Length: 383
Image (cartoon, rainbow, N blue to C red; front, side, top):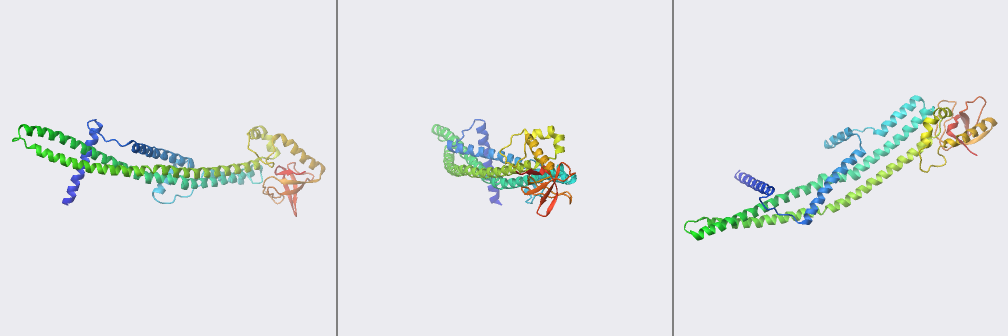
């Protein structure tokens, strides 16, 4: 118990001494030991790394998960060391609505089929985004968070300890300076009235204790400065590690955007052909804006521009007029709505012909021993 009381008193004395020294420095009443320029630069570099790492990490989290409520929920589950419940992301939720709407309107209708195709594409994009989030969290966010919660906490601890050692050193310097001034005065009094002054020896002993204390605090300060310097020099290695992590994140983004581009390119091909009645009713409002958007290189199987619609229509008109048969390539998958229709697979080649009384938007398609009605908007006549 006595030991604890003494330790408590010693700690309180040290804390008070540091507080006094810190206050006097702020008031300009005490000298302050300055760190060397190299160490100051390292400290500034570490602080800058910490600040920017936090900002980059926070904004990356917003990029990968735009929903703030979802981010808060994931944070709570992470702190509780529990797995967050699985939920549909934005693309997957949209995909579900599109597919449900398409099934409601009917997969055999142009609009219903288009909704389903869009929904399937959005679902693929949602899966790709989920993969991006997972990869980004593991390869990019986790290393950044480990630095903030691990390495930088250690640096902060040692930096605070260095600050305390500096205060101890400067407090020892102040006590020694005051002791020497008092010793000089006592020496003058002792020389004038040696028989009456008894403080000289006391101040001499105080100066010796202060000198010894100064040597100890200087040694502890130098040792702590070296430890802090070695830790801070590791910031360069941290930058190199974060650079590698950033490269991994960029590659993940590149893969994600490439997949999204391919999915949308395929979707554009599938949506490029509409029933003629829909085209005639919506030619100005729907098709013209889409055709005005410049697109990257698209294969020959992409939808024909509006200027070519007359050529396509005339080809089918000639086929109906001659009552002959032609080979045709299927542009997109088609699910038969009933037993009178024929299901189609993209890129397959079938034989098509017309029969008297058939709707102008349909032909008879035939493959091996199967035949049924097929929409002409899903076909491309071959030469």
